[in-house]
Image (spheres, one colour):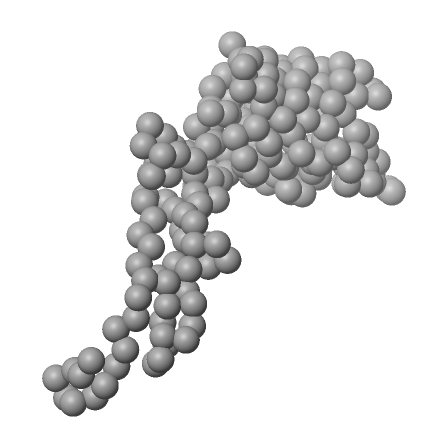
Length: 193
């Protein structure tokens, strides 16, 4: 074909591009729905991080983290004892794949341990509809470092049971105000109220 300036160009069939249509582009002319992106490896549309399809499978219009939101009773089993508390899972401004565990571990109930008064908040990142991680973090004004998994980094994904809504995970708490820093690995279970 020829454009208005007399330059020739190829009118490539879907899936091809380049001056002579020699480059196969599997995402050429592929329109993905809301919050989805075409994968050039296979030409298929996949939901962006933090999203999944709702009632229309063409649109990724459900925030995965919304499945986690709510009020919970928490129980942490640690070498130092078993701790119970109430917490809430809330939206986070860090992005659609993040949520906040507000009142986590009951640590905010113990200002003498160097933590602020309630709520003690940590941020978790959704991996998919049933898994999440807690990236290493030190909450503001607290002598405590939290991360998913045990001290070696194993067992680092939390799990949300889709049938019951119960959330379980292992975490390591390191108290940074001791020399050397001391810590313990705990197993947590959050049960929806």
